[in-house]
Length: 342
Image (cartoon, rainbow, N blue to C red; front, side, top):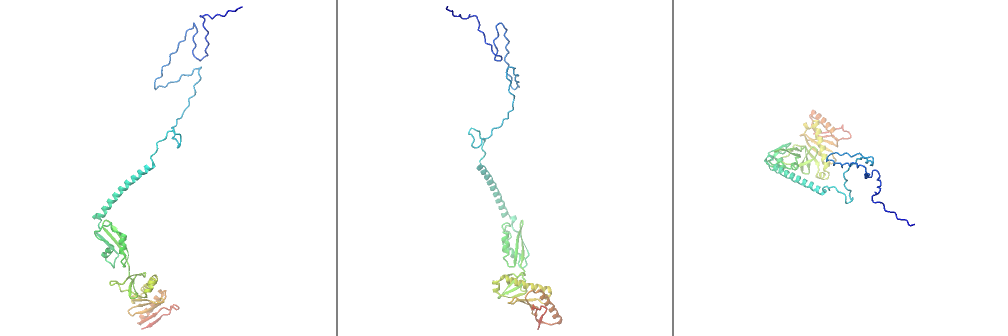
């Protein structure tokens, strides 16, 4: 038998609707049921007001917990970093800063130079600093005018233009002046302190006479206005001075020690010292008094011999005897004294 094809469904039958799973959206209401009211969309929250999030529904997954996030400023890119990174502003060049410092120093230097130049111009041209007074202390052989002239010190000259060291050195070229110190006393006074040499003996060398200090230094040749009432040292030759000047100075100093010992013993007051002669062997002979008594002292030391000579002369004076030579040069027996009478 031939079967008939099934007929199409009637047009009034509705197809069954597939049920939607829960939570996937709202399903169409069944025929004959009342539709549920649709909730209106919430109004947008106003600006600057805090909006609280709606609690999650039981059908939705819970929101993730809030976390705190710290934001750090971007670091400057390292040298040779990726080209896309931002670079900080470059500082001023070292050369530029050095030029700024040099320019400031140049300005200060120019200003200081201008101030110094103005100050110097004032002090070297102002009449307030002109020399009006020259004070000289310590001179006996020279006058204050001679000292000032030797140092180039002039009244009316600016006090600051005077070279103090040069003036003192120029004054010291005078053989009588051992040392000169020149100082300023502002605004207009120059002070000169002088140390003069003091002559203690005349030293005969060849046919010339020289003045000697207490230390044995021969400092000048005898001039017309120099003192002559001094003991005379003889027996020193020019060859000795040229060959051994230091030895000559020591010999003269030793002779002046004898003069000092004789003054301490009282001999020089009664018998002024006339001459001190140096023999070739270094022994000395001292001529004293108007009678020209010769004391042969031989070799040093001389202090004890001078004391013995003082006792002999005192005894001779008590006896009213006159001696021409007294020998005190017996070093083997210093207690033995030989007196040659006139």
